[in-house]
View: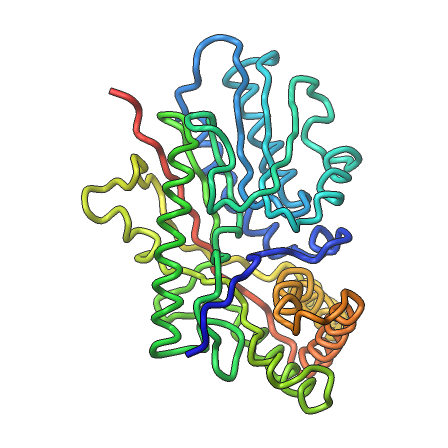
Length: 360
């Protein structure tokens, strides 16, 4: 078994690409807004005129954060009135495309602080497996599709690049890493939340049969990688290092830390539901039958979400230009394969609401 591979988890494609093509994530976030409103209305906000703090854990380039943050601010205005300052902290890895994030926050027509001078967006470049904000400072947290990324890759996946195509010791090592990272994530967020604060989470999920909905997409990409090795575009040893550091969890895995007494690090579960996210591109295909357009959308979703992590596994000497060529060839090959067998990419999302215990 090879040694542990350190991994910069979950960096999306820059240049605004993730903003443009992450429609599946956008659809999943929309499903959680009613629970987000309910969570906001349960928070015991401090009296007075002190600032309210919202933390967006795993913001990426910001486009998919606009709707939930705007929704949260509108709800808070109903609860607290028009003059209370609101800080919104967008948290992501230092390698995140913060230029695109700031462009969205300053120029997007749907930016959330457009008509509210008492809203103050901020950004933090740090892994959320560390503390990113002071203790007891966050009123409400939001994290959409980010906590699926592990802090490191514990093993290679023979013959594939995704964990759900592994078994035996490899699968066990991923499960162990995922359980450890989940507890770390929860403990850090609990430290940052104020007593009575809420954390709303969306995570890619798997059903009781172990399916995520992305199997066909990932298998097609795996076939393309094999062809790229045969053609000499990448070396066999590079292919062996390519592993995606995401781990979709079952509901039982998410709830495991809370089994002893219903709490973990002062957090308790108020909601944990598995929901189907319908492919937002499929309706268009059923109307026009354009399989090339459908394949292009799916390939661009795959590229903007997953390919930067795969490219980072190539040999250290690979230049940025070579990584871009790798991404282009993988996208092109994937698109051609997907066009041969059009199918919807319906996936699963786990929606959780956690509450921090209030002081007695």
